[in-house]
Image 1: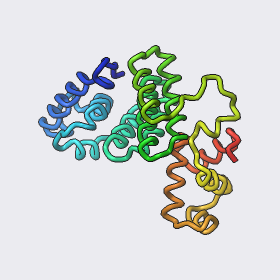
Image 2: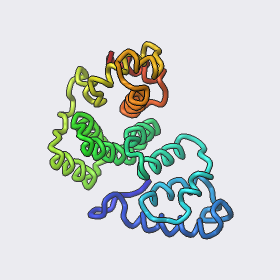
Image 3: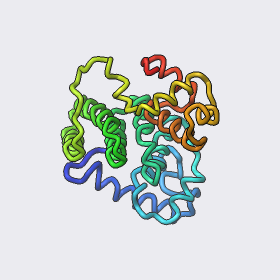
Image 4: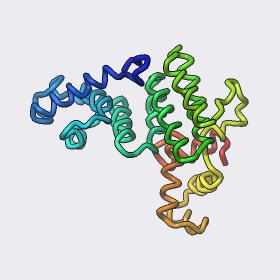
Length: 235
């Protein structure tokens, strides 16, 4: 995994290498015989690390590159989150959690917290920061822990006390009251249109709420969301 470099965010030198490798690959003809034999297994981590860099042709390469297995899917999600869909960072964290990769999980949760803070969702920001802090502590990743604590101070978002009772689990997911209303209807098997009619909102808004719920719960389908809602007593 990418190692953290103190004072340079989450791996400054690695990003330079990633940019060089991505440019070398693209310069060799995209999906031809490029860097690392153009293996998706090699390229997805490189592409993710270079997501914020201005590499010509990168988007086209991503569109043509297959995704094989959950690790590559996690890298793909992270790339997508970093290139215009920051609401996906919670799902990225969940993907790395399922793979038991604590460091990228904590980094993704930190990014999810940044997005939540920017959108004014302090509850979600606190939840993501608390979970990120826990994983960083397990790894003894002090520079990462320092970044998490700095964001918590800047966002004026308290880190929950470790060992807090499970009765606060609902708050950890960062669901708003409206999202809990939508989740109840999702668990009842309602469609977006039916949810919109029930709550007097547009179908587009209902769909957006469902997408946010899936991201916050770290699941990929409505059935999984309903299962999680019952398991964690969210409804």
